[in-house]
Length: 295
Image (cartoon, rainbow, N blue to C red):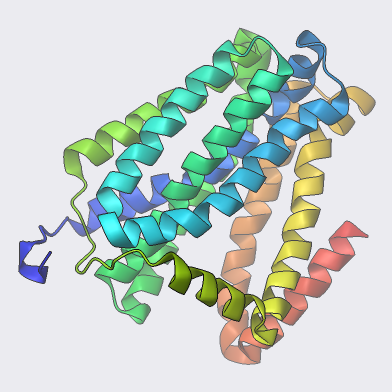
């Protein structure tokens, strides 16, 4: 597809689409957390099985991006996004109707793969449309929307879980997927200017070369450790706060929302730190903060 054949989208629409696509991760992980102990009990599952609903989601989310990236480079962002959001919506309905914990784990894994398509394409859209400097500014606006979604998700889950039960709380994810799918189908235009053929051999060689690079190993290790701490907190928080400390679900939702507010505050602090201490200095300080918080 030539550059002239692409239909430009209004900047506000681009920011809205990016915010929703990036926000799919916190709403999928955080909204159902207040309902996690209840659904585990109702489905006759152990705590470990209940936590597997989050583990399966995140593993599928990470692995799927390795494949959706090359597929979107070959077929375009729009078909991958439409297919991914359709799959996400169907999986959300499957979550709601789950008769067993094994069913729920499976549908959450499918939902994680679909979530990978959304997040991966969102970042690719930035690269398609903008130069690096302008893309960073657009991404900052979109991340503001992500922060709002991240704050509202646990609050909504904390209110929905005791009012309508965990099944209808999970149904909210299907509704979110349907809304985003409708917006994409009606307003989103293809952003990929030049499609590249699929070459499994080349992809495999690139993966091996990247996996051996010392810089990749260092940064990926730091990110994996940080995200591992976050995952441990997310997986255990509902059982600890609700069952051990006997918090109400709305209060638990508020506690989780405070973590999202801290994340938003961290982005502002980081922007001020970068000119003073540079990228490595800012990341070094963030790593010590993560270590201190975990300790």
